[in-house]
Image (tube, rainbow, N blue to C red; front, side, top):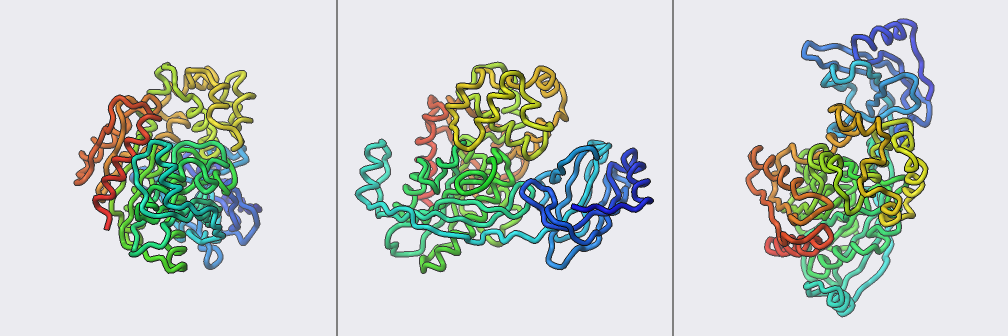
Length: 486
């Protein structure tokens, strides 16, 4: 991207770094790629900054080409090569031509730029494929052999949908997911979205017939239209999955719901107005993120009937960070490596993932995060105390510095500081050693303190661990949904 500066702006940039926490510069409007970098040059437009009396600053810029949207990016040094999107609480990209820096003191040497992009057609169907049909007998046999006490009422058709959505920067990308529909429904169906747990292998995603697609099969065979998003970076979506990144989890879910509604309408399959969301483990986090996003920004488009986040890490910066630092043996230490790699890609914690990792992990861990290896492969390369893969100086900084980049990234993806409006039940088993139940307790107490009217915390089997809690939580959530289903 070609960037033009005026001599006066360069002087203001030097002055601004000391006082304004920003950079006054000319930037070229152009398309932005999936890594947040501009990919083509366009007409330059000026960026100005105004310091306000309340320790905030307002960035303003002239409109770029008609029909473009804008993304504010930052970095903390002009010597770097990559720019990063501002925190995910903002709805990027935007059509507006101004933005407020809310806390100058927190970033005294930060530089900003604005780039323009063609808007994504969120929820646009790119392709649909009928992957498989299952008869009622086949589903019943499968469930019986697996010990699942759900009686199917019909056979199902399983489709793979590929659709346009946005990446963690708000720029256009593609994602995939499964849509499972009952055979020959007799009336309008409620829509349910199931968010799967942690996956590393792209080929294990629901649309690729991974195991958790059978949750959608269970719903569809009992009278729902069911979707199961793969999330970004899994299935047919490019790049590394942005693991536990709340905003991209939410947008992937919401845009698949849009695709599913349009697909059903174009195939003369009626949906009623009910919408249910549930998910387990990472899917609990993704469900919580999607509910927050739906209620905050899409309440007129989607009316949520109820949600059931299950066994999710809702307090990443508190409960999870403390657990990582506790020194206890983790059942699945690969979670930490996966999270670190994802946040490195989104938040640029260091120049490269390997720079954060102690020997030999800087060489052994990154190659395993290629979408072709499973959690077991990474667990074998990990120490039992996952946190010690960090270099000693990095671990010391993470332990002691409240504004350490990893702590900031974790805080950006906490999911308990808001107020659910639709009925919500948090399911979590006390015996969970992978994702401590304290995550759900923190969220539950926060929701109550903020005035949530219909939230409950349910422990369906206190002795169950993380894997053992999956079926009891899911069954309780489904029974709850079934009681409301029209």
